[in-house]
Length: 252
Image (tube, rainbow, N blue to C red; front, side, top):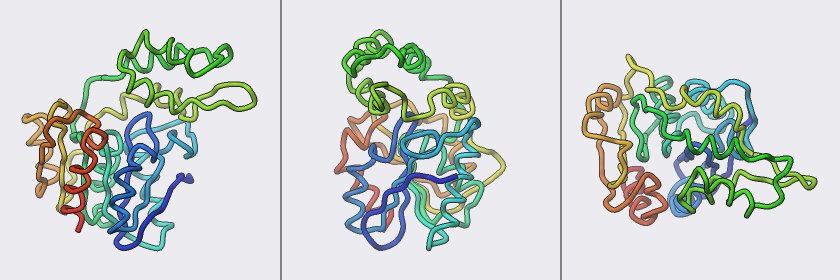
C-alpha cells in the first residue's frame, strides 16, 4: 500500500512518523532541522494524511506497511523517530524487523497497553455532520462541546478538507475509531531490539511513567529515557529546538 512521503536533506536516512490524527506536517519543524545533517523521510501513516485508506488497521499492520515501503527504497535500513502512535509503530517495526532499524527514537509513548484516552475526541469528530457543515469555524464551534483546548481542535481540524463544496475527512476516521483499541494496545512481547534506543518523555506528560520501566527494558535493553522539562505530550511543539538537539546528538 503506497505511503505518502516527503524527502529533505542528505546523508544517513532517518524516517519520521507522526501520531494519531496527524500527518507528516506535524513533525515538519524537526524534519527541516534534522535535514541539515541527515536524509529525512517524513511519512503519513496509513489512514492518515495523504496515504491510502484501509478497512483494517493495527500496530502490526502499520509497521508492516512501513517495512514494505522501506523495501522499495534505495536503502535497506534507517534510523526511525516516532511520536505517540508513530512511536508505537516504529517500536513494533524494531521488534518485528530489528535488522532494518539502526537507531530508534520514541517521543512520549511506551510499549504498554493504554486505557482509552480519545473517547471525547472521537465523539466530537463523529458528531460533525459533513453534509450540513458550512465552514471550519462552524466545525470548531461544534467540536468545542467535546474538546476544550483550542490547540487540540486546531490540530484535529487540519484533517478537514473541502472538495466540490462539501467537507470531508482526509483521515479515515471510521477505521481509526473502529480499530482504536488495537492502536493503544501494548507492543509485541517476546521480541527484543538490541540497538540504541532513546525515549524522550514530556515532563508534564503521563504517557511514560516509572512503572513502565520493566516493559521498556524487556523489549529495548539499551533504552535510555530523557525527560524534556516543561513540555506536554507534544514535546516537539513545546520545545522544538531542545528536542531537535537531543535527537541530533542521538542520531549522529
